[in-house]
Image (tube, rainbow, N blue to C red; front, side, top):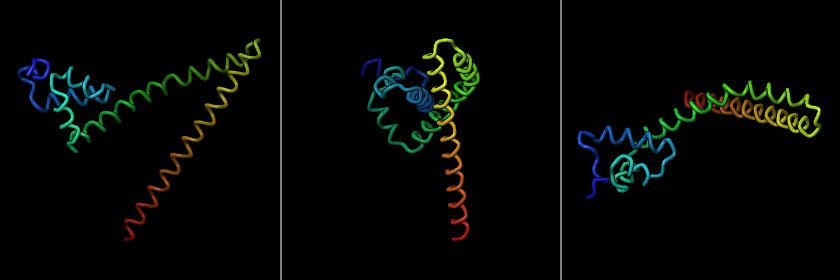
Amino acid sequence: MTAEHNPSPGHGKREVDHILITLLAGGMTQPQAAKVAGVSVETVQRRMKSPKFLAKLQEQRTRTVEMVTGKIVETMASAVDRLKELMASQNEQVALGAARSLLGLGREMWEVVDQQRLVEEVTELLERAKSEA
Protein backbone atom coordinates (compact mmCIF):
# COMPACT_ATOMS: atom_id res chain seq x y z
CA MET A 1 0.00 0.00 0.00
CA THR A 2 1.11 3.51 -0.66
CA ALA A 3 1.27 6.13 2.08
CA GLU A 4 -1.73 7.80 0.48
CA HIS A 5 -3.87 4.81 1.47
CA ASN A 6 -2.64 4.48 5.03
CA PRO A 7 -4.29 6.66 7.62
CA SER A 8 -1.86 8.78 9.58
CA PRO A 9 -0.61 7.12 12.75
CA GLY A 10 -3.03 7.66 15.59
CA HIS A 11 -6.03 8.08 13.29
CA GLY A 12 -8.52 5.49 14.44
CA LYS A 13 -11.65 4.41 12.61
CA ARG A 14 -13.80 7.02 14.38
CA GLU A 15 -11.47 9.86 13.47
CA VAL A 16 -11.22 8.68 9.86
CA ASP A 17 -15.01 8.37 9.71
CA HIS A 18 -15.36 11.91 11.05
CA ILE A 19 -12.93 13.19 8.41
CA LEU A 20 -14.70 11.27 5.63
CA ILE A 21 -18.12 12.48 6.75
CA THR A 22 -16.93 16.09 6.81
CA LEU A 23 -15.36 15.81 3.37
CA LEU A 24 -18.25 13.96 1.74
CA ALA A 25 -20.87 16.26 3.27
CA GLY A 26 -18.85 19.17 1.95
CA GLY A 27 -19.22 17.89 -1.60
CA MET A 28 -16.06 15.91 -2.24
CA THR A 29 -16.28 12.79 -4.34
CA GLN A 30 -15.43 9.45 -2.77
CA PRO A 31 -11.99 9.28 -4.46
CA GLN A 32 -11.17 12.86 -3.38
CA ALA A 33 -12.26 12.20 0.20
CA ALA A 34 -10.29 8.95 0.29
CA LYS A 35 -7.13 10.69 -0.85
CA VAL A 36 -7.45 13.53 1.67
CA ALA A 37 -8.32 11.14 4.51
CA GLY A 38 -5.44 8.86 3.58
CA VAL A 39 -7.55 5.77 2.97
CA SER A 40 -8.40 3.71 -0.09
CA VAL A 41 -11.48 4.33 -2.21
CA GLU A 42 -12.54 0.80 -1.26
CA THR A 43 -12.53 1.84 2.40
CA VAL A 44 -14.83 4.76 1.60
CA GLN A 45 -17.10 2.48 -0.41
CA ARG A 46 -17.26 0.01 2.50
CA ARG A 47 -18.12 2.82 4.91
CA MET A 48 -20.85 4.03 2.53
CA LYS A 49 -22.56 0.63 3.00
CA SER A 50 -22.78 1.11 6.77
CA PRO A 51 -26.21 2.38 7.88
CA LYS A 52 -24.62 4.05 10.92
CA PHE A 53 -22.06 5.87 8.75
CA LEU A 54 -24.75 6.90 6.25
CA ALA A 55 -26.94 8.24 9.06
CA LYS A 56 -24.06 10.36 10.37
CA LEU A 57 -23.30 11.56 6.84
CA GLN A 58 -26.94 12.55 6.35
CA GLU A 59 -26.93 14.41 9.68
CA GLN A 60 -23.82 16.33 8.63
CA ARG A 61 -25.31 17.14 5.22
CA THR A 62 -28.46 18.41 6.93
CA ARG A 63 -26.42 20.60 9.29
CA THR A 64 -24.45 21.95 6.32
CA VAL A 65 -27.62 22.79 4.37
CA GLU A 66 -29.15 24.43 7.45
CA MET A 67 -26.03 26.55 7.95
CA VAL A 68 -25.97 27.67 4.31
CA THR A 69 -29.71 28.32 4.38
CA GLY A 70 -29.24 30.48 7.46
CA LYS A 71 -26.61 32.54 5.66
CA ILE A 72 -28.90 32.98 2.67
CA VAL A 73 -31.80 34.08 4.89
CA GLU A 74 -29.51 36.61 6.61
CA THR A 75 -28.82 38.28 3.26
CA MET A 76 -32.36 38.18 1.90
CA ALA A 77 -33.48 41.41 3.56
CA SER A 78 -30.56 43.27 2.00
CA ALA A 79 -31.29 41.72 -1.38
CA VAL A 80 -34.94 42.75 -1.20
CA ASP A 81 -33.94 46.29 -0.16
CA ARG A 82 -31.58 46.48 -3.14
CA LEU A 83 -34.26 45.24 -5.52
CA LYS A 84 -36.65 47.86 -4.14
CA GLU A 85 -34.01 50.53 -4.85
CA LEU A 86 -33.55 49.20 -8.37
CA MET A 87 -37.29 49.37 -8.97
CA ALA A 88 -36.96 53.16 -8.67
CA SER A 89 -34.32 53.21 -11.41
CA GLN A 90 -34.74 55.62 -14.29
CA ASN A 91 -33.75 52.75 -16.58
CA GLU A 92 -37.03 50.96 -17.30
CA GLN A 93 -35.32 47.65 -18.05
CA VAL A 94 -33.56 47.70 -14.67
CA ALA A 95 -36.78 48.65 -12.86
CA LEU A 96 -38.77 45.96 -14.68
CA GLY A 97 -36.10 43.33 -13.96
CA ALA A 98 -36.12 44.21 -10.28
CA ALA A 99 -39.91 44.08 -10.13
CA ARG A 100 -39.96 40.67 -11.83
CA SER A 101 -37.33 39.39 -9.42
CA LEU A 102 -39.34 40.56 -6.41
CA LEU A 103 -42.54 39.04 -7.74
CA GLY A 104 -40.74 35.77 -8.44
CA LEU A 105 -39.21 35.68 -4.97
CA GLY A 106 -42.58 36.36 -3.39
CA ARG A 107 -44.22 33.57 -5.37
CA GLU A 108 -41.43 31.12 -4.46
CA MET A 109 -41.65 32.01 -0.78
CA TRP A 110 -45.41 31.40 -0.74
CA GLU A 111 -44.86 28.04 -2.45
CA VAL A 112 -42.42 27.06 0.31
CA VAL A 113 -44.87 28.16 2.99
CA ASP A 114 -47.66 26.16 1.30
CA GLN A 115 -45.45 23.08 1.01
CA GLN A 116 -44.50 23.34 4.67
CA ARG A 117 -48.17 23.55 5.67
CA LEU A 118 -48.93 20.51 3.53
CA VAL A 119 -46.09 18.53 5.14
CA GLU A 120 -47.36 19.49 8.59
CA GLU A 121 -50.92 18.44 7.72
CA VAL A 122 -49.80 15.08 6.29
CA THR A 123 -47.56 14.47 9.32
CA GLU A 124 -50.47 15.21 11.65
CA LEU A 125 -52.77 12.86 9.70
CA LEU A 126 -50.17 10.08 9.84
CA GLU A 127 -49.68 10.54 13.57
CA ARG A 128 -53.45 10.38 14.13
CA ALA A 129 -53.72 7.25 12.00
CA LYS A 130 -50.91 5.59 14.01
CA SER A 131 -52.55 6.44 17.33
CA GLU A 132 -55.92 5.11 16.15
CA ALA A 133 -54.44 1.83 14.89
